[in-house]
Image 1: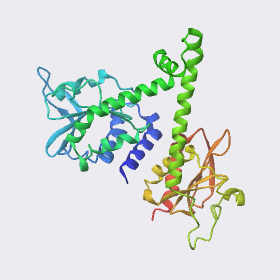
Image 2: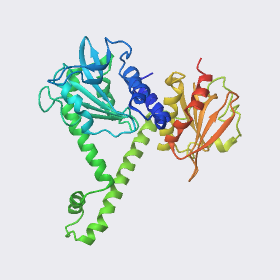
Image 3: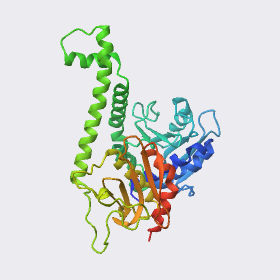
Image 4: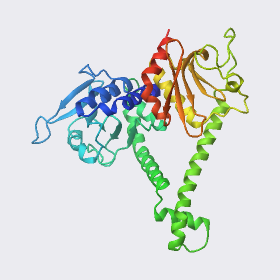
Amino acid sequence: MEFHERLGAIAAKIRSQRDTIQTEEATKNAFIMPFIAQVLGYDVFDPREVVPEFTADVGVKRNEKVDYAIIHEGEVQILVECKKSTEPLSTEHAGQLFRYFAVTNARIAVLTNGITYEFYTDLDSPNRMDEKPFLIVDLLSLDETLLPELRKLTKEAFDLDSVINAAEQLRFLGSIKRTLAAQFREPEEEWVRFFWKRATDGSLTKRRLEQFTPLVAEAASQFLNDQANERLKAALGAGQSPPADHEGDGETDDTDTGSESHGEDAEGTDSEIVTTLEELEGYRIVKAIAGLEVAPGRITYRDSKSYFAVLVDDNNRKPVARLHFNAKTRRHLGTFDAEKNETRHLISGPEDIYLHSDAIRAAARTFGG
């Protein structure tokens, strides 16, 4: 599996199991050890690579332990402190990391609850862990622009110098992005005044401030939607177009799937078929789940007027799932049994697809050979 697909698989596991994980030990076993093993590529059962309950004497304190020390080329390079997944991370959780950072060779410290990973180094003062992380990775809201930096910490591509050199820029970028996100959601008065001055020469009275504030928030929302639509258009223009039937398939979009036939309505014409961002998001989730059973490169899609089909080998006889997202108010996910009979599940949005991971994997497993 590709790097981003391994991350997607861990995210799928978190979504399906997080409600049953209530303790720190369960969080380690279910989420954090798989992340270290499958994403970072270190053998969690080899003490030459990963040392659990790592101990180092710190001043008068003896036998304090940090949850994991990750070793690369014989040196401790990364310290990992774990908290249970039900707890949001806070600076108070990093106390042991602060102490251990100064007495080991590690330049990277990680604080995690199995869902969010905060990465620290020593930009502000040598051998003293910074108070703020330079990189934050949220597996349930993954920022793909951060993946190249995360990849540098994997066993196969470990590049500490490159990570450290980029850390300050990453820290500033992360802070700016979080500030923008907060202002887009709930603009502060200073932010509103900034745009008011560029929109008009008039004075900003209290009444006008109350009227203008929601306009700033609405403009931000529309701007983000416009950017997303532009990316979608570019992706559709340069990426996957509706494929022609394979030679020898002898089928249309509804042949032998065991469900009702939609006929011409399902096929539609190119001008009638609109692939939405929501469908593409759903496709990526299904692909991440199905990719646990078959090579991700074999998983593709075909959009139609009535539904969005996810297939193996671009073959309608190998359905993995269908996204019925065209209704105005309801969303359904279609899954298939061994006889290719479709069952529709009412979902509130793409994230609910993870609730049906077992059915998707079972369908994909049928075509795993």
